[in-house]
Image (tube, rainbow over all chains, first blue to last red; front, side, top):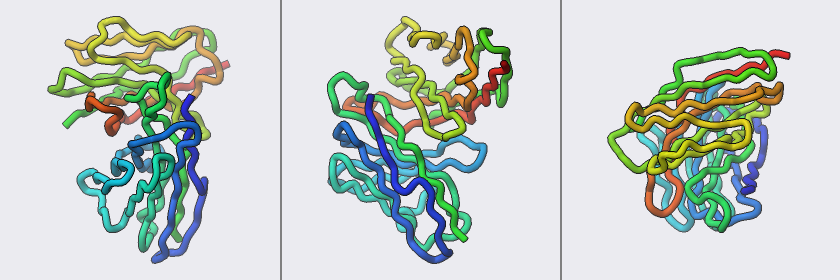
Length: 119
Length: 117
């Protein structure tokens, strides 16, 4: 299958600091990556769509200056939470769609998620 | 905008039984994809099954099958011979056909499925 990794799996930071989360496609090239947010016992909400080499597209209500997304290569997208506050504490999940033959190109494969706690 | 509704917050069945999870969606588009994802306690999202809207034939993957009713905008998941490892949150998800690859997913609120020994 298509494997997606995230790093770190869990991060604790102080209010006002910035945190970077990495999302990597390990065995395929991903022209498109997605970032989701999941609050406890809730569903996933799409935050933004990231295309390699271009600016991310943010969903309505998502602050693009707070959640900086960079998709610098076909295997790496990063989400930086700037000036984090306790309300930014959440579970952040990335996904990627594969361009590899034999894997559904219309299907998203998810990373294991990153738990962010802001004190 | 598309919406996905899962009306069963929680379901519980005995091991080896068959269980059906419901999902309805709303869209004015005709080309789209539907998915069921499983999220166990590890929180890793796992693809269970996918369905292209243009295909009338219901998708099947081993013990998992769907009942796709396009006119009714219904997409239910049937799990046969349920196993303890099937215990998880199950999310129904929708995405439009974008012509070149995947598009963002809209998820339902999820159904917590518990398989009892």
